[in-house]
Amino acid sequence: MSISERLLLGRLVKRDEEAFNEVVRSYGDRVYNLVLRLVGSPSEAEDIAQEVFVTVFKSIESYRGEAKLSTWILRIAANHSKNRIKYLARRRTSGQELRDGTDATEMADEGNAPVQAHFDAPDVVLEAAETERIMQAAIAKLDEEQRLLVVLRDVEELSYDEIVEITGLPEGTVKSRLHRARMALKDMLEGKLK
Amino acid sequence: MKAPDSHQRTNEAFSAYLEGELPREEQAQVEEHLASCMQCRVSLERFRKTVGGLGALKRTAPVSFLENVQAQINRRSRGRFFSKRGLLFGRIPFEWISLAMIVAMLVYYIVLLRTSPTGVVPGK
Image (cartoon, rainbow over all chains, first blue to last red; front, side, top):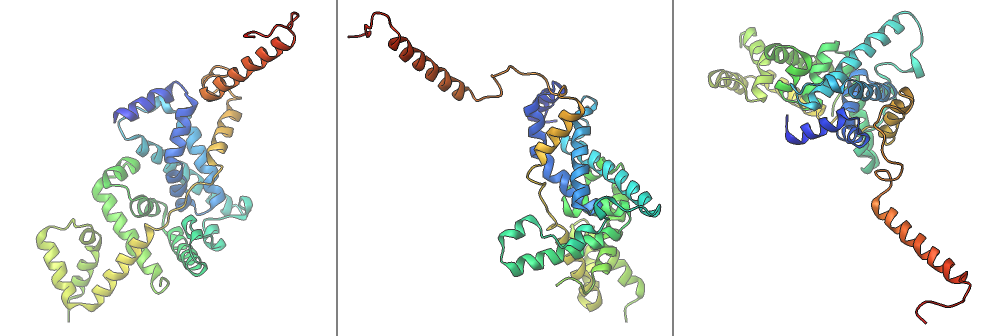
């Protein structure tokens, strides 16, 4: 653990509000994007991401610093997402409507553009939104574990060491399952991307 | 014609090949196969495009995210989660407090002058 992380941790344990704000500012976007890619729905993603930080703050005293703070937070985010995916799947199979009418491909169906795209020309925005919609729909078709590996490695660009810490899988297993997930995505996207 | 398992072996090595993790000998075998197999070259290009495209899937949290997290924590803990700070210090910038004190002293001084029973203005 770095010195700045140790200092931050000390302030977090003392429940210093500004330290908590710093953590949300530093990791909020990564947590939100990770959760969004795993569950597929922006409204669910915001809700889960908030829950992640509530859990982080409630259990900060149990953080021992074996992993990096970012890795610990992302592990919590992955676990919350998995639980929500299971919960949503149970609701779906029991025939109930999902909250706000969302499901794992809600965002893809909405065709929302990535944030940066709003500064680009309209045709670029449309193309970016369409690419995102297609890719998100393909990610949603992967099984839960493959989805997590693809998002951690290729969307969040984490190292294999970090992915091993988050998933608890051996590195070789991470690599072989990630490769299968990438191949599955490639096949699903055939002829769909420009 | 290439043996089917050579295509499969090459495809299975795509991730390690693109991440530069193949041992030299295996890398040479993959490259040798790619050099003579259009089907696998196309497949590798699509694989590369897929993996590269994933890196562009970035979105930032909603603007109100921090406020919403704070509100959640304060609501659930009934405002008792964060350690208490002084009423003024720590919440209001020091410069503002200094400025407010200077203004307050000036006002007090002016009021004092106006209500002086002798009407003597100090300094005259």
